[in-house]
Amino acid sequence: MNDGRKEVIKSAFESMLFVWGEPLEAKVAAEVFNLDWKEAYEIFKELKGEYEVQSRGIRIREVDKAFQFCTYHGNDEYIQRLCTPVKEKRLTQSAMEVLAIIAYKQPVTKGETESIRGIKCDRVIEGLIKKDLIEEVGRGTGIGRPILYGTTKTFLKNFGFTDLSDLPPMEDISDVIKDADESYEKDLFQMTLNLKD
Image (cartoon, rainbow, N blue to C red; front, top):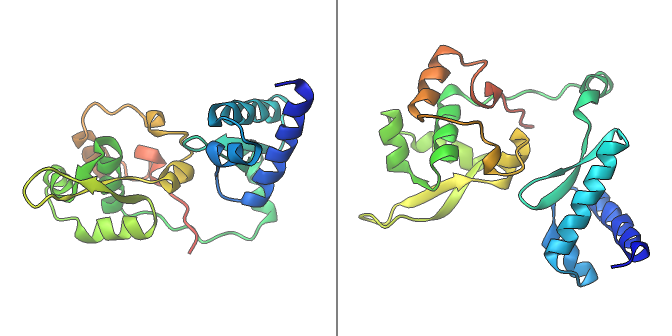
């Protein structure tokens, strides 16, 4: 691909990101130009790098091979001063524990999650599904073919992860529960998730 065509595509991708709002998958953008998705992916990565090198206030972030405009985190203080504060809604300790188990053990059944926690978690799982942080990802092979749960793209986006490999290392999932009890404000994912009502 010559440089002139690449610049046209980059410009178009920039406009597409602006109007799309949600993370734009590389394969969807590729279809607009009849490109291979890997070629579109590389162009997005290059565009992302340009924003970073130029120290722009708007950046491009990757979420599971999709891309989205976001603000530079170093400007958070100024944005907060400008904007009316949004009501901060934290996940409960129970929700954080269940979310952590699912994030690290996925795909995982409700029964396996309850076995690790030692208590029922039906309502917590329902709440996490409503917040679009987890979803059904299939069925297990055990008796009754139980539902398997995994995290969503919203989970990746809200916690600032590109993909699941960005999860902090965890030696033993039981550490999540122990640490959550000892240090609710400081533990996994900084124990805070801002969700708009």
